[in-house]
Image (cartoon, rainbow, N blue to C red):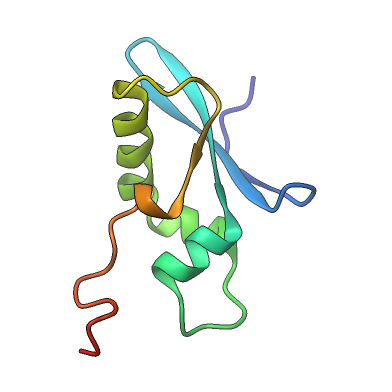
Length: 91
């Protein structure tokens, strides 16, 4: 099984795996979630590149969801990724 992240056109998600204990766990995040979290002012951002640039934070969110009992594959939602400092405050 390949554990290389990729963009799945049919679902509009980046699909990837995070090492948990002794086995990788499958996860995905929608391109819109990546866009609004990391590049809200950009119109042509690449979801796979955005995932790769922020993999440590995104993978941590997967680990939190798994620790809370989420089953594989884990779909990250907007609320799973912390907002940027000052986001929505007009700063």
